[in-house]
Image 1 (cartoon, rainbow, N blue to C red):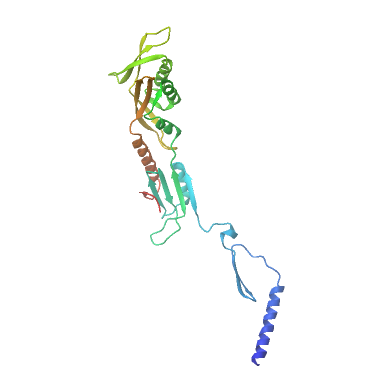
Image 2: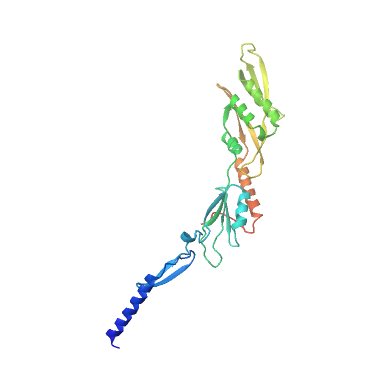
Length: 275
């Protein structure tokens, strides 16, 4: 057979194959599989294994943020493995877990993360908001009344009585304040009301008082000592308080959260941030 005859025969055979392929009934392709077809133009491939076809991600990814240690431990238990890593950042008040961290011998995506971002309680923020500031008698009394649940020593009942005394003493002229050996501050005043003008009186309040605050949502409570502050000026008596070392209490509270997490996982909690 000559070359021309062989080429003609091959061409006729290919035409038959192409005709058969075109006349074959269409077949539905199954998602999740890889296909290869012979066509007149060569081999055609169809990949139906990707997540855009199956709806199943090829790997876990994303960052989940929780607000307390309980939520952190629940998510950690569900998703961590032996190579997961945990970092604590005391400045940002965060604990971050890299659930798909690199192994000792292989790189991984490090794209599946758990983030505990502690949130300060409303009471903590309110007490710190007025820390070191002086308020009018009425403002101070109202603040004390609004925060009776956090007052430990003296009791909330005693502090309520003190607050009411300041509210009742708005029409007096405070002249001096003396520190007593009992640990109280005694204010001397003169009545300015028409019916009692010139009548003198005294009002004693504790020099220090103890408050109980929960710094973060889901954390435990801590005792803090606040010292009474005052000023007698041309606008009358102003009152306030100064909390002793609140930053240390906050740092201790964060350290306790880290400790509680570390005691319940089999992974060392590292100081810092993941890359």
